[in-house]
Length: 264
Image 1 (cartoon, rainbow, N blue to C red):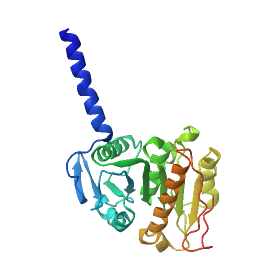
Image 2 (cartoon, rainbow, N blue to C red):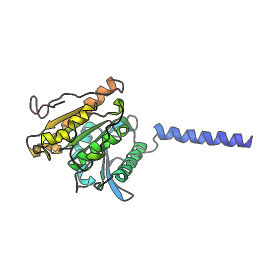
Image 3 (cartoon, rainbow, N blue to C red):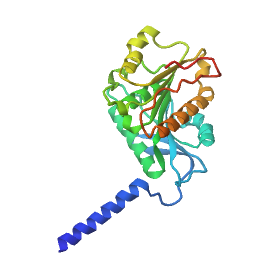
Image 4 (cartoon, rainbow, N blue to C red):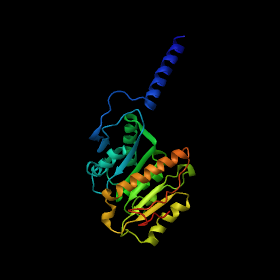
């Protein structure tokens, strides 16, 4: 009887904690901008002032370019976060030199901690970045599709040191929608870029939309931010309408009607 009673007590405690981890948030959540040191690295997190756990919130994971800092890069996302109502997680991470898995693990662990602390909508998690950060975002979306909802890469994402690690073997339901905003002078030619992945990724069933900027300044977040937010909002709404089923390209225009059309 004592063993059975101990088993019931242990089971009750386990179920209680499991329930808390899924859906219950206690106390006043910290809002605003903060910088956190975690292990070897640090990250910045922004939570809008009107945050409330009464509803679920989108999360944007914003990855800086090589040589950048999360606390600097996150500044460009704050206005959009307040206007659109989403959380921003911007880590300062070392650029992977070979196998990037240790960095991946650290980043995903921090993401999971944020999901435990805040009411994050698991169906509205965008991973994005600029320059190398965009290349890393594409790698993460292909490697860990169950962690995110969509990928946006700003600045020639396909060619780079992580390309050989791109994972294109997931099932159709795991293939995230991808938006790539290319600079006016790609690091590689269109022919090389096709060889290095664009047509190949599409041939594996991924929905990949691309936009080519005419000037480098056009890719600044102050110019493309509203487009990224709108693209992701529409994507999320379409996914809700489809009851979680895979979503194809949105075929929007960029920087004004008829200019720089998105190519699907």
